[in-house]
Length: 187
Image 1 (tube, rainbow, N blue to C red):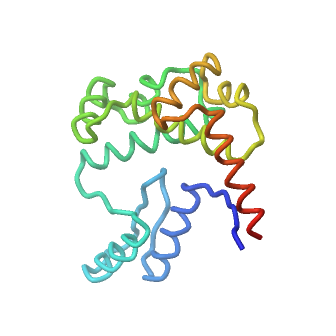
Image 2 (cartoon, rainbow, N blue to C red):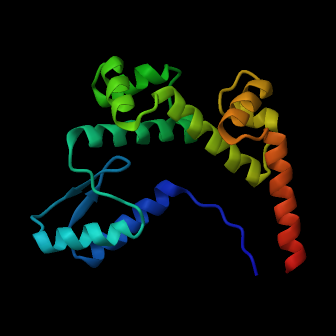
């Protein structure tokens, strides 16, 4: 039997962190996305055990300031792409500058230096990933998806979608449909 499922990566990550911290009896408080505050001193053995347990889930503790900034930038962009309704109508550059308390020029330089891509390209990739999830969910039309992701038109969404995936959104939708059909026939 095949099961299709949907999940929120942020909620899943928080649940994993909570489980692992509680199993190791580490007192903590969840802060912003990708950040926790540990209340007490943690032994080196417990810290190493936490790192090892989180590694199984591809979660890594970032211990250098620029790496932390990169993660905060990524988290803020993902937050914008997935929860745009919660944000005022300001530019992404202004939002990132305000949230991270750095000039946007500095943020873009650090991001591209460490990730070897631009913030703009990272945003496009995140928007296309969200578009793929929305297409798979089959609740919205391509027009609604393009509007949801702040594209000026379906054509512009399609152009970026094809650049990133090699497929048009319509082709992607057909492939998903065929895979579902095959999965249903196997049951």
